[in-house]
Image (cartoon, rainbow over all chains, first blue to last red; front, side):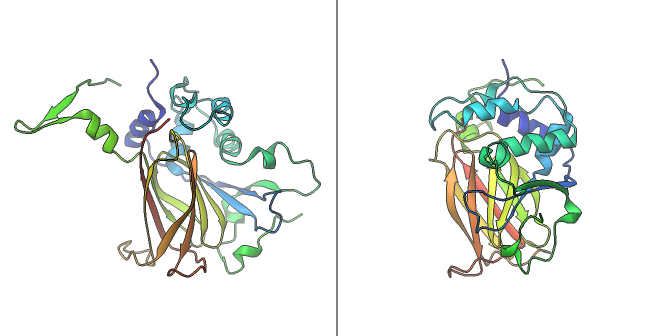
Length: 136
Length: 127
């Protein structure tokens, strides 16, 4: 029987060194054009688990679970873990897991509303944070 | 990995059901820097932190909660170095089974402000 995902994450945290990703995902919400660009930051313990393999479930289990009402059994906690990912594959996984499909799958407009960038490209000066947009 | 299956643990005098230990453990927690280059310092069961704008963050869980009836504890502070000054406000804007939205400020006004130390802890039942 497959161990629950939370138990696998707990065990992984005890043995894996956290990995701060060298990438960030910049994105804009097409349903809220007045809001600033958002920055997705990968968790270092999650990234270590992704790079190690045999801990995280397949991404399609999360996508199916989006359709399952709260309180109903979900598929991803007990799904068979997938193997090791590269950091780039892990970022794509996170995009599909934690960003609304309206951004990465359904948007058909001409604006670029999502970019995967090196962390150095994110300004550390946040003086005008609420005016950030993705350069076109 | 091996499993130890027991229904109770005891120190020789007092006995406690392991269900209390499992159910009493935090199922997710996160400590992050909300200033400069926003980053997670340490966490459990978190996949990403999203910087939505000044003082507005989103955490996403790896193993999601079963429903919205989970417990939330938060703290935020103004000093990075010691991480022992918890004098600011971190409010919850919305919780979902798969994550939570946070608003940070210096006081109880509605003005959002980036904070150098933000933390949250969650107890409840996972899916």
